[in-house]
Image 1 (cartoon, rainbow, N blue to C red):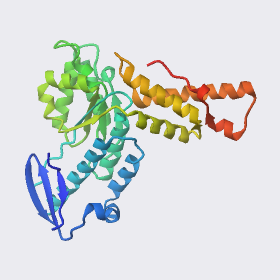
Image 2: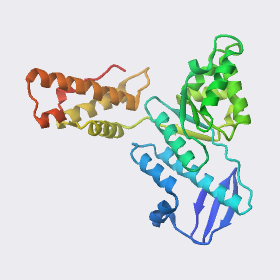
Image 3: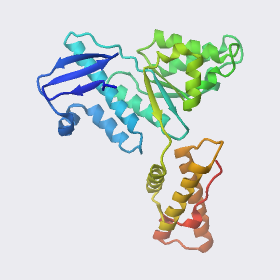
Image 4: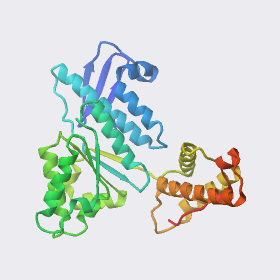
Length: 315
């Protein structure tokens, strides 16, 4: 698949929108990979979002897509300024992935980016789930959904576990919520961005029974499960923020446990970053109790999580 935006050495920008390639001549050719300083000084919003994304572990596909979205919006503005036809900026999205893979964090970052680019007036994030959208009687659902959309105007409405809206069949009020969302996507398409999120398998089924939705979400981002090495990196980042470190034996114990739970469990969905956070929080409490009972409060001991402190929650 061709990239939406590529910058050539001859000063041409190739833009691929809807499968059609356009060429735009620029006055100065700047190879992106060799002139990051120039790009960042000229594109402050991109620099800011890249700095925030650099703190996220993994998510390479997401980081690539975010840069492409920035380039797409920016080039469309340049085309408009030069009297050229610009592609419609439909930015509604679908996020697919298991819990704890960073979907909400990325949605919040996108709100910041789009506000910086004036694609959104506020850039705030409104989080919702089925209970926030679906009412108890006829007409109630539409009103609840409209109220949420009103709160999200100028920002992003993030609906987690969106597939649950279609679980009750034709007579379920969830269908009314979907219909209301679709209507406002068309009526207020430039005033807010709708992101539907959930497990990949369930979201694919959701789209199969609502085929009209697929075309309304031109941007789909997959959030894969973290590898064991990435989970260890997340754990170390969380500990560093709290001014803790893992003893070497504790590090080995955690890595072995993650290897086992990721590849030998069955029937349950691994919660990725959430699982790591739960492990860290339980272990910090266990370390505090150990130090209290031993009456040892040296600085090095206060900062170190030992192997015996590591406690693993049930998935």
